[in-house]
Amino acid sequence: MSSLTKLDLSTNTIRFLQSEFAGGLSHLKVLYLYGNEIQEYDASDFASFNLLDMLHTDEYLFCCLARLNEENCRPLPDKLSSCKDLMREGVLRAFLWIFGIMALLGNLFSIGYHMKMVEKKTVTSELTKYLACADCLFGVYMICIASVDQHYRGVYIEYAKAWKHSAACAFLGTLATFSSEASVLVLFVITCDRLLRITRPFSKKNLTLRSVHKVMLIVWSLVIAIAVVPLIPSDYFKGRFYSRSSVCMSIHITRESPPGWQYSVAVCHGLNLVAFLFIFLAYGYMYTRIKSSSKAAGNKGSHEMTIARKMTLIVLTDFCCWFPINTMGKCLLALGGMDIPGEMYSWTIVFILPINSAINPILYTISNLSFKVLSSIPNEM
Image (cartoon, rainbow, N blue to C red; front, side, top):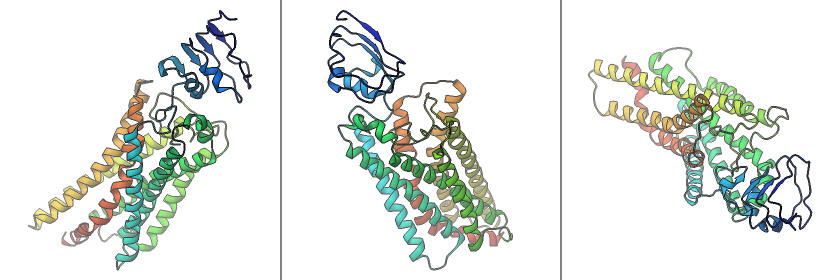
């Protein structure tokens, strides 16, 4: 036993590793432990394998205990985490707090503004409140994840499995999905409303203060269903839809095929892509319509440029958020296993995805004052 260099204990239904099981294995270089549900072990045993070159287990925790490099151990680590921290990069940790606070405070301001400062309620102000509520929840999600990272600082890997399979992680994953999808669909409704008011200003099918709440009830119900369905016990999701990463996010832009990955693709790279394309094309058409109407009325100038800048910002922020995500997702599917760097996944989750939640209050509240010009243009047509 003392001269043994390779040991295969895989798929042996091992649950307990007795203390000092590494005794007499001082020359061991390769160890296979995958396919077991190890619940009890002595951390010092893994650290005592001084010559170990390769370790294959079911949890990256044991790789950390054995102090092996990532290339010599399986499974690979979480794209975001390290042996010590939930968020391995300090700059990403900082952005997590910054965007979380921006989204929370900015959208709370937006909600308060449209509740207290706007004298007359309009369809636009009501829709903006719904958008702010959705984006505010994403700010709450980010601050909660940042707090969990702070709580487990330096010892995260010891609690990684318990955290990712906890009710708290499932709740935050549901909250993030609800928030991001609600934001996308509310933007879709806002775009539909503005498009109809530009093209058919006197139509009876335009949203009213009464109908807008009915529409949003349908949207909210749909989004709740999308976010909650993965929590329903089933052989498809296997209760692990929101436990695929340390930030409890279900977005699929990696080579792995965890339970429910097709569902994630359908939502993130299907529904959201369709919504983005519609918003992009609709705002382009609205700008063209407004520009031609202004020329016909001989009213060229600052109003036209103000509208153009606002529309450009709206489309640009949507583009910056969803285009990279959908591009990575489509490439992953089309090329069948294209390797997307872990750093790209990290930046997508922490930096790209929250852009809309942090910027929307500026676009749809502060600049909404200048957008009132849109309501007067149809009357000139």
